[in-house]
Image (cartoon, rainbow, N blue to C red; front, side, top):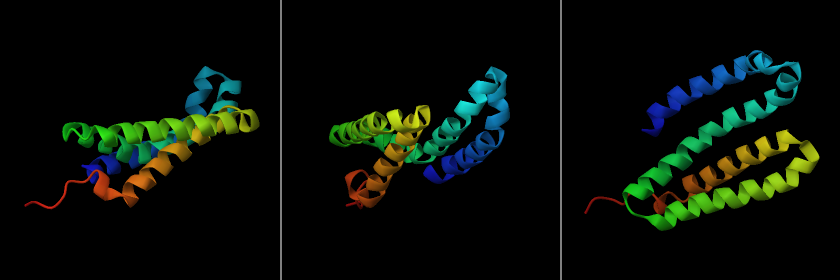
Length: 123
């Protein structure tokens, strides 16, 4: 599921990154100038988010609420903490960077600790 969804998502992310500057011009030149980098960061964050949301959905189906709470709490803590640190320095781009870093960090932990969420071998 991750492989098939990932292929479609990568194509969508590449397309969104390519058209972001012109698409945001629909909302005005200032909006495009200040929002393009943020949109790029948010588009890139969709890639690790695919793993994170898949793990949450799988864990909910398997009634492993500890994993669900751990993933969502970890993501919330990292993103809110980084946003508080980066927003004063980078402005709205800092919030986008915090979201990308948070998604990537949680996805990296989930890849590292697959035993937390992947089903074990059949018995």
